[in-house]
Structures are given as structure tokens and as C-alpha cells.
Amino acid sequence: MESAPYSVLIIEDEYPARMLMMDYVMNCPELKLAGIAESGDKANSLLTEKKFDIVFMDINLPVINGMDILRSNRSQGTYFVITTAYSEHAVEAFDLDATDYLLKPFSFERFRKSVEKALRFLQESKQTIPDENKNQIHLKIQSDSAVFLLPFPDIQFISANNKSCVIHTTQKDYETPKLLKEIEEKLPNSQFIRIHKGFLVNLSYVASLRYDKGGSYTIQLKNEDETTLPVGRSYAQSLKEALKL
Image (tube, rainbow, N blue to C red; front, side, top):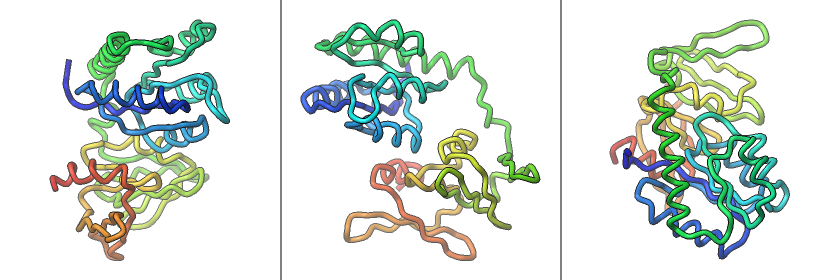
């Protein structure tokens, strides 16, 4: 099993259970805690903004329950483990492709079995599913009147605009009715990186990373406008690593 860190989202509204889950995750070297949500609406927001490898989720959540989140967010490449005190949802959860179903209270050993199961699925998916972006050299987007093939090297950055995205290239800007998460999945992650919930950037265009006294980061791009973009705190470390800083 590879030891590279896999991103984890914890969705849990009860403080003691949330702290226990955080402790369990941090005691698994293969995992990296990448997000925490205390309510269903916050969970949906995070799942829209960012792709997670494994999600540990309670069912009884404020605003939106866990089963509805699973129903609307299950997708290939993200593995959901249900963590709940109630057994009656197990059949439905597995029907919705949940990876495992943990009944509270559960031990670290039982949690670890779920982790190993999810990691096995992740490894198998990498081996059996071809990398659709591997041989691509452009991003295909569609407008009302045409289909555009935008070469990856021409794309400087991508910004979210409500329920659409704007692709900023060296020639012009293109708007497409796609979420940023959908665009991100079509781009090679060796070249493009999420720096903020509203921005993806081509690493080739990053000129500098600046740290402000208030604790926030910004980047400046190597383009005609010398565009400045904000860097979300949760994305700063992965950006530093990508830039080898």
C-alpha cells in the first residue's frame, strides 16, 4: 500500500466525536486531514469546492442529513464511510455505494479496517481506471454556440463565477457553465492547482508568492496584467509544496 497522504474530510456535528475522528485520522500516516464540516450545508460546500479521497460522515447533521449528502455527492474516486449510532440506515448507505458503515462507539482498530478498505479501493481505481487527462493537451469547453479546445499552456488561471467558471487564457476569457470542481477534474494536477475555493492556477504562470502581515497569502502571475490572486489558508501548504518552497 502506498504511503502518500490521501485527503480526508470529516463531517461530524458533535464535538467529542469530531475530536476523536481527528485523532484517529492523525494516527494514520497515509491520511491527511484536509477538511472538517459541522453541518450538512458546510459539507456540501466543501465537497463542491474540493475533491477528497475519503469522507467520514455522520448521518444526523444540521441542515442537510448525511444520507442526502451521500446521495448527491457520491462519485468515482471519493469513498464515503458512514459513522453513526444508528444501524437502520446501513442497507440504504451500501445501496448508495458507501464504502463502510461504522456504528458508534467504534475503536481505532475498527476505524483502521475502514481506512484500509478505502485505501484498497483507491489503489485499485488508480490501477484500473485510465488517466483521462494523461494524453490530453487541451481543455474542451462548450458555450451556447461553439466548442473550444483550449491548450493547457495557454490557460493562465480559472475563476469561479457563481455556478459557472471563467477560463482566463493568453488570448481571451471563456465562460463555461461548469463548476470549478468539474473543471479541476479535467486538468492535469501536475500543472494546475487549486489555490482558493474560487481559483485554479497554472503553476507555469506563478511569478511570486507573497505573505501578508495579516496571515494571508497572495500570488502574482507572469502575465500582461500581472494578475494578483488570493491564496486560501487551507491551500497554502500544498501550493508551497508544488512550487518547492
